[in-house]
Length: 377
Ligand code: DAH
Image (cartoon, rainbow, N blue to C red; front, top):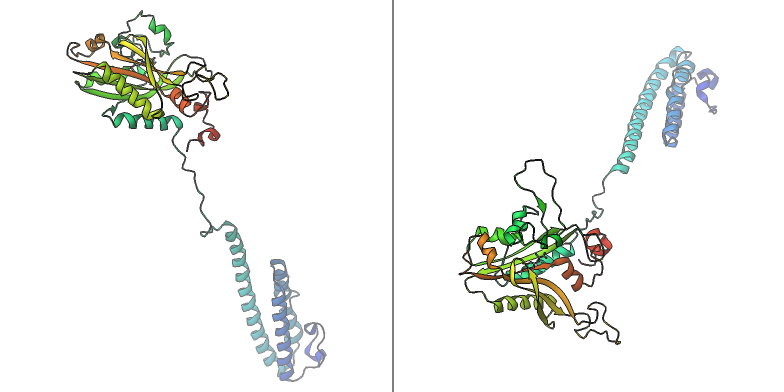
């Protein structure tokens, strides 16, 4: 039997097929060809070409078989050709439908493969961060004072002149106000009182005493503001911790003992302390506390004999102001100055942090450069 390249272009007569078995064999061959073509058409364009070559109305192979084999078939072969053709059509239809759905789901798979979340991948670790150095130093100082019976108080950063000045024994035209170039708020005309950004944490002394009767032992950490031009040691905003202890029997020894205890806890047992007379309107007597220079060990000189630049050869570093509460202050909070006594101090936190951690520019504390912050995890 002649099995040419494309037998479906010829009639059964031309192919010499006169017996039903020959017809069946021809269809079997066509079917094999179809299966081969199907297997070969793997991607989308090849599949389309394959499908059209079999199903196209005008020139598709099924149409050719209808036109060339079925229609001209002799009566005795018509039946078997019809049956075989129907079976072939069913097979072709089934395979093509199946392939179509396979191809479209494969396309769908490839989209979702790109978008799919791989749950086995390690997650994105978000850095937890850490407390800012200033927060850490606050914490350290609070822990020291809390361990000896102080509690932590807070006050507003926007204050009235009464709390920031008057009640601290700084009347309106007192020259000390000039030292505190102050930010006043712009308020509507007729406002009950002027308002300002507090220049120190000392107003919390007054607010604490107003709220309770002696004994009072509080520390008050927070931000304070002054119209200082920025440089290596000045910032318009910085941090203080105020301290206040008032009771019926507090002496100057309690005062200096407490401060010395704090300084040793914070800087180490080896440091020496001293105090010098000073002046604050709300303390009497007032002092300035110094500690022996932690960089040169108090000698004023470096190991190689050059002058210590941190204490400028003095061997001492000025720390903060303090004093016994001025009796005039008790008058503002209705304490009896004859019955109570106490001490107060105001520690500049930024300065202390700079000293302890050898930071030579206050500005880096506020620039929030992670390369700096990461050094204090
Ligand atoms: N309030 C002062 C200032 O900011 C610091 C200060 C000095 C606070 C002596 C005190 C004190 O409580 O007793 O300059």
